[in-house]
Image 1 (cartoon, helix red, strand yellow):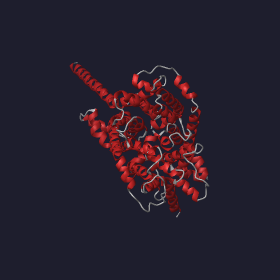
Image 2 (cartoon, rainbow over the protein chains, first blue to last red):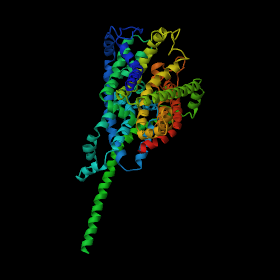
Image 3 (tube, helix red, strand yellow):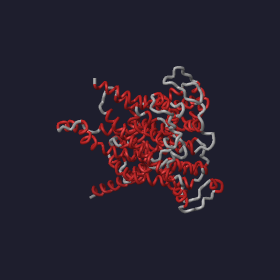
Image 4 (spheres, rainbow over the protein chains, first blue to last red):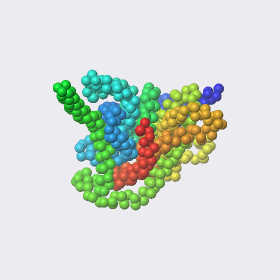
Length: 266
Length: 314
C-alpha cells in the first residue's frame, strides 16, 4: 500500500517536471496565430504548425543532422584510441592528459567561439558544415574520452597481450579486440556526441554569418527573435528538434544514464 | 665456454630485437594519443592563448579588413571593468549561479532521496526525469517563452484563474522579475542532472550502515544526518563545483529567453562577452570579459580538481 503511494507521488513529480514538454507538444498542435490560446488538451489538433515547420525548417533539420553525424564520427575516431591509451598505457603523461581534459571543461564556449571565428574567417571555414563539425568536437571529444576511458579501465591487459603473443601489432589488437568489446561504451559516447552537437546553439550562432548553413537551433532562435508570429510553427520546430533526445531516452535508456554518471563524476 | 658465449649472443640479440620492437611500439603509442592531443590543443589551447592575446589588442571590425590589431596593453580590461554594465553583469552572474545551484541541489537531493526508496516504477520514472536535461537548450527556451508569455502564457492564465495574482506577471518583460524567471528555468533544466548524480551517490552507500544505525536508534532525520550526508559529501562537493563551473558560463538559455534584457536586467559576464564580440565586433573587449570569466572559474576549479582527483584515480 505504502509502495503504491510512493509510485503515485513519483508520477505526480514527473508530471510537474515534464509539464513544459507536454505543453510544447500541445502548443504545436494548435491553429496558427500570434497568440497562445491553447487549452489544456489539444481537442482540435491541427498539423498546420508542422507543415509550416517542415517547410521553413526542414532544410535546417537536415543540416543539423549532418553536422551531428559528422561530430560523432570525428569525435569517436579521435577520442577512442586516446581513451585506450589513457586507460592502459603506463606513463606520467596519463595524469597530465586527464588534467588537461578536466581543465578544458572550464573553458566557456564563448572563448572557443571568439578564437575560432577569427581563425575561420581567415581560412574560409565560416558558414560551413565542416567548420561547425570541428567546433562541436570541442564538446564531443573530451566527453567521449572520459566515458570510454572509464569503461576501458576495466579491461584486463591480458586480453590484448594474448593477441600480441600471436604476433598482432598494438594497433591491430586494438581494432580487433578492444573496439568490439567496447561496443556499449562507444554507443554511449556516440549518443552523447550526437546530442551535444544537435543541441549546439552557440557555435551555430557565432560561426555562421549568413543564411547558407543554418542548424535548426538557430532557426528556432530566429523565430523567437522579434515578436513571435506563429507560435504553432515555433513549437512544432521545437518538438521536431526534441525528437532525438526523446527517442534516445526511450530507446537507449541504459546508455543515457551511464553517460550522465560516467561523464560527470570523472 | 662456447655454450656461454652462445647464450650471451642470443640474449644480446634478443634484447636488440626487443629494443627495436619497443621503439616501434612507443611510436605507435604516441600515435594513439596524437590526434586527440592535436584536437585538444586546437580546440582549447589555441582559443585560450588567442583570447589572452586578443584581450591585449585593439581587435575589432577593422582588423578583419586590414589585418591590423595594435597592442593596447590592459586598456580592454579597464574599458570593460569601468563599463556601467559590468557591476550589474557581475552581480547577475553571481545571483544566477548561486540561485540556480542552491535550488537545483536542494530539489535534486530531495528527489534523489525519494527515488532511493525503490518503489514500483521508480527506475522508469527516474530515467524519464532526465528529459529536461537532454533537450536542446534553445528548445527549452522556446517552450518556456510560450509558458511565461505575459498576456496568454499558460502560467499567468492559470495563476489568474486561481486568483493567486490580480494582474498578469510580466515574467520576461519586467527588469525586476526577469532574472528570477531565468534562474527558475535554469533550475528546471539542472534538476535531472543533480538527481542522477546524487542518486548514484546514495546507491553506493552500503545498506549495512543503515542497518547498524537502526540498532543505534538512527532513523529518519538522524540517519540522514549521521549516515547519508557524511557518505554523500564527496559526490555532493564534486557536484557543486561542477555546477559552478558549468553554470557560470551559461549563455544559450539567457539568449533564448531574454537576450540579456529587458533593460539589461539579465546580462551576465557570458552574455556581455558575446555581445561585445559578436554584436559590437569588439573582439578585444569580448576576450577581456571572457578571460575574467575563466579566472573566476579557475578559482572554483581548484576546489573542483581537489574534489575530483579521487574520482579520477579510481
